[in-house]
Image 1 (cartoon, helix red, strand yellow):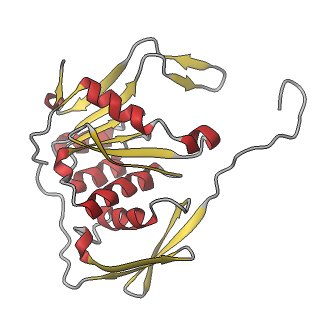
Image 2 (cartoon, helix red, strand yellow; image 1 turned 60 degrees about the vertical axis):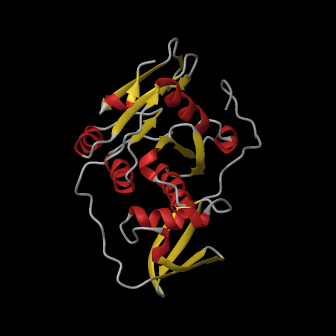
Length: 240
């Protein structure tokens, strides 16, 4: 629609698909995603985030065919609960924070469809471990956690960046992974901030570069200055 008239247009619309996950021959869940990218990482990260596995080696076999993931687990997996604060000596600069968020904003799929969230994991806040996109912010996060587990990356030395809101269910996944620093361009909820503080996670929201734009119902807002808000454990971000 333009003005008071309608006209047909060609539009890029993302294809939403259900990935079925079976565990030891039984149906476990259906994950809404778009297929073709990082399916193995998604399954591994999702099972880890849900407490089904504690490490990638807990999976004896994993095959994905025709939108069905068949997982066989090793025996005697003991579910580990989040009990203690995350221990990490990792410290990063403010520029590291901006760079991590900049990296997850470079999504070609988002540029074409505006239908995905992105997440990224960065070793010591600098070297990209994985960057992923998905329809939901939760599954983009699962993908990068799964990638790190498959690569044997020490998660307590990483920073996770996201385009999505940091509510409690997102922060719980990150706490379970032992990731000490979260940075997102989006907002933070009260329970998300409380959980981050309780478990020793540095939670940074509203990470915006100067010139960043935000679409509202009636206009486009342009941020004149770069900024961020640190909600918990700010000592990990160096003021340089």
